Length: 175
Image (cartoon, rainbow, N blue to C red; front, side, top):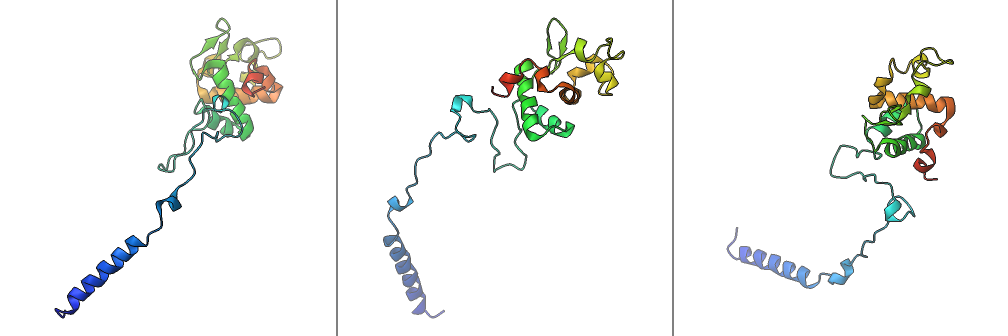
């Protein structure tokens, strides 16, 4: 390279660099509005918003849905709609606080969804083997401690009598 051209090229780069710095827009052009504590789930106050994590753009893993994973996902695979699956998930929270080994009603309601064994999985005059056994959902009431079996049992119960079979249904649906 020519010894005269090299310093001129360097000076022209320096001048362009300084000119770009001097002519940069004021910082106020980049002032963005402050973020607010807006509820991402709608108009609910933050205290009433569902405690469901928002998906993170930094991960390829989907964020768990619902407050009692994997109840929501199992409910979808059992045939519930997404709205119904959300109710099943809320029922699990209100019935057992997501505890798969929960036992209630003096030992008569079992599992994450607190399914009433005398009504649904023990022999009675209407179902000599038990309703859920006759529906081929399970073989014994103890299987209700398995979340997937409990959700499939909930689907059979829902098809037979609706969500009203759970005493916490009104609370779970937000009513």
